[in-house]
Image (cartoon, rainbow, N blue to C red; front, side, top):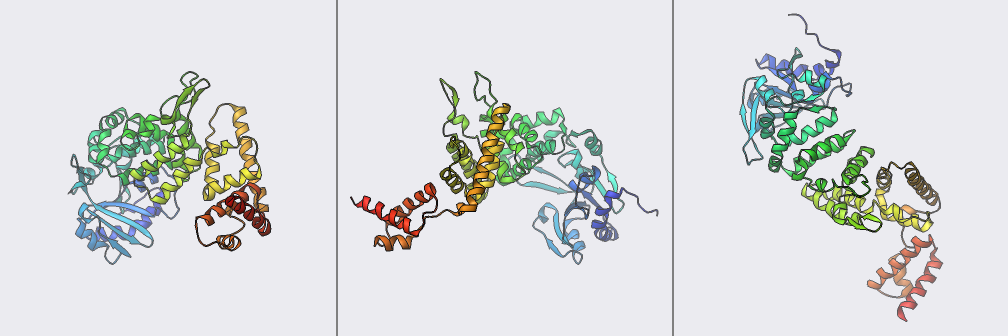
Amino acid sequence: MPEATYPARFEPLVEATKSLSERFEKAGYRLYLVGGSVRDALIDAEADPAGPSDLDLTTNAHPDEIERLVAGWADAVWTQGKRFGTIGAKHQGRTYEITTHRAESYAPDSRKPEVEFGDSVDVDLSRRDFTINAMALALPSMELVDPFGGLGDLIAKKLRTPLDPRISFDDDPLRMLRAARFAARFAMTPEPALVEAMREMAGRLAIVSAERIRDELDRLVMLRVPSVGLWMVVQTGLSAHFLPELDAMELEQDPIHRHKDVLAHTFAVVDKTSPDRLLRLAALFHDIGKPRTRAFGDTGVSFHHHEVVGARMTKKRMEALRYPNDEVEIVTELVNLHLRFHTYRLGWSDKAVRRYVRDAGPLLKRLNELTRCDCTTRNAAKAKMLSRRMDELEERIVELRTQEEIDSIRPDLDGEAVMAILEIGPSRAVGQALDFLLELRLDEGPLGEEEARRRLLAWWSAQAS
């Protein structure tokens, strides 16, 4: 039998699956590589030279047989997905998910797939999300199995589903959100029937868990140009079912002078930020409060306190999407602070810098980047002015850091010292005294223990009068 030939870029996949495919072949079963590893190998996407760390495979062996075949080969085995036909395994640091050929679909009101096992790889591929993911490499020969023209679609940059898109999206409605991500990630044009099905079936997203939607949103915002997918999410009506605030933001800031609409500005900011997931989410949410605060006056449109309203809205939406509490807190605070830079219009005094750094805390770097990216004006002079002001702020922060510990500003005296000087016990007055001393520290910088003591006694005397 002649040795199989395949492109050199397949070599890492061959090495990663050789010993496993031999076990299945010896037992009389067929084994195929499927999913992203196949797609990415075909387009020669940049990857680890050692090959992908996670591999998806499909086989005509049933779960019990899969479990038996990986025993003794795998360093670890897990069976949580066994009822859906999937056995997981770890081998030499690489993760393998091996699934019996199947055809699965969702009941109309269920979040749990109903699984039927099969013997045909073509049928299994027909139930996958898109043609570019409905390809397989037969092991160990690495022969391409492509019954739905996925390779041609990759080359033509066309996004299609193997079957009617209504069938595909009915099987798993999250695929509609995935369509937006793949269109953005690979710069693909979705076929009209796919887009129409997304519009018709957007409401089916309601049966998908908040956690799955959240994870898909995270993947979308981390792309090189997330706005391509985000526009698709809004224009097909998907956003109305998990992030309705986006729809409300599609309004002109000033309908008379036709300034850029809030949503277009928001997506531009998201694209400009570096691929830091929480920063990208903050960019997505930073103007979420504008529709609720929009007002018109003699000088045009205003959005007073939209950062405060937006922070509350951000917290509520992120909690609904089941984000961890610490992530909700970070993104919410960035939204709340994103206008703070603009409150200092008369130059960066030491006092202003201290307060800005204290308020930002560990979010300072992210806040500065969000502030810079928030400037999407086409007015070159204005953009240059805002950039210069941010440069000045960052220079002033560096200068003050060399003089004092502005990243951990605290009063010159602690609570124990306050109680000893004022001859009082633990009480509300101690907290008030510390607040007074902190304000002095922010306004004037380090006072030293003696000066702080003198000021404290003067303040205490004034309280008693």
